[in-house]
Image (cartoon, rainbow, N blue to C red; front, side, top):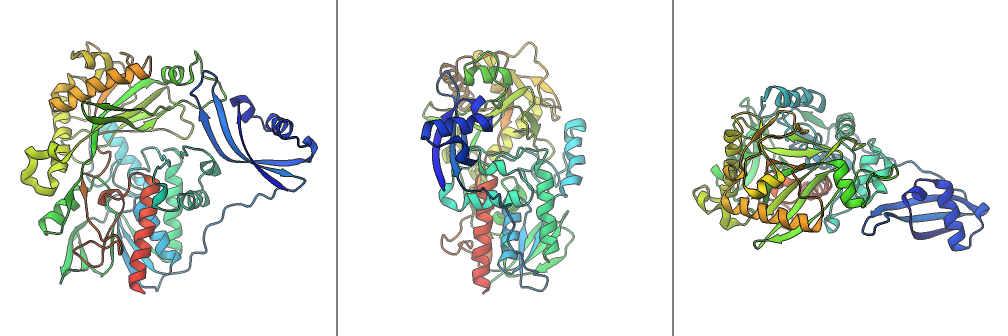
Amino acid sequence: MQYEFTIQVSPEVAADPNELKNIVARNNGIPLEEISHIQILKRSIDARQRAVKINLKLIVFVQEDFINKPIELPEYPDVSNASEVIIIGAGPAGLFAALRCIELGCKPIVLERGKDVQARRRDLKAINRDHTVDPDSNYCFGEGGAGTYSDGKLYTRSKKRGDVHRILKLLVGFGATDQILVEAHPHIGTNKLPRIIAEIREKIIERGGEIYFGTRVTDFEIKNSEIRGVTLLDGSTIVTNKVILATGHSARDIFELLYRKKIEIEAKPFALGVRVEHPQHLIDQIQYKCDVRSPYLPPSPYSIVKQVRGRGMYSFCMCPGGVIAPCATSLGEVVTNGWSPSKRDQPTANSGIVIELRLEDFKSFSKYGPLSGMYFQKSIEQQAWRVGGESQRVPAQRLNDMIKGRVSSNLPVTSYKPGLTAVDMLTVFPEFIHKTLQDGFIAFGKSMKGYLTNEAVVHAPESRTSSPVRIPRDWKTLEHIQIKGLYPCGEGAGYAGGIISAAIDGEKCAEACIKVCR
């Protein structure tokens, strides 16, 4: 027999299978010797009280053997000679669109402007060491997209968008730990995700799909409001009437191309701010209410939301035991992001702290029409480059110094490898953003005692939270509202916000595209 229970235990008990079995038997009147196995379905941390607890959802096997069935991938058919779908972008939206195409019997041809996961490493090293930005291969562009080398967080609030569990199971099938099916906030880690992405690529190729790296799309061939082909940087054209556009939130050249061709796009609100780094032990002390974190607890994250000056201000992409990385996609700009390795064992914690922007905030860039938000975003990144020293050195300020409006007399070494330049953040941001951040950090400090400290360092800017543009599509067919056969997809089109939601949207676009094919 199988019984499902929800239980709250100490971290020590949650980590000890024998002790957990004893407590389950005692609390539920089950003879200990009759419990053959306990399977953990879900695990989360409850740190609201002084004594931290672990919430567990369990299936208890009583007088019944447990058979561990490994997760298997779908039976992907050979699609070498099947009808073709062009997919632009090999991020999570593009790759999962390709897998779904194969599963449904169509041949995906994936065009990726960047390099494969291994070759990307050299370009990431060049950003950190030489301050050199390759506009086609960086933290945002390349196989796997922005998530590959920026953490691999799998948590999403978008439960209604599709089958989250299906995407997680596919990732496990391609080599991720099955613990992502259990943890409330699943995470793979930047050190492990590239191997999984490579496995997905190999499966796509093995089953007859094609992937081309270093292949940038520069134009769309359109006739009678229908997609007829795509033009590549080398001048060649691929004839097609089905294109899934999954280029990510930083593909500014694609947004500009659509605008030039009078293909309808819309300015979209997004969030922008800074990335703040604290010593991890300090965040542990605040969140776990302890002097020293228990070895049975992971490095603590935090999540905080405030209304400040009539705007939402919140933590974004929080990385416990992680580092801050340079994520510019062009020369002459500075962009920050954060990531954690699988063990989250770095000595620092960082998080984006961003404020909500509105369309009216971009009015000084109104001459750019639907690209007004993108140019507002770009202007701040370029200003950060100028005041940071015209390099990838990031403008920085100790947190208390920022609140008080004074340039820090010295800065500690942080995890951001290209280095820091001490500035007043008012030289980076418009006054309304700067004032909101100052007031918001004061409010954060009242909610998280100890957060507001000069041990924390502010890095600017955190500007690529989501796409500043939406590419509108028909809600039934998922085609662009103006161009038949063009399927805007994922984060870049404004329909996702992270690995899981982008993967779900990629699958949905593949299904919609193939439905038309048939």
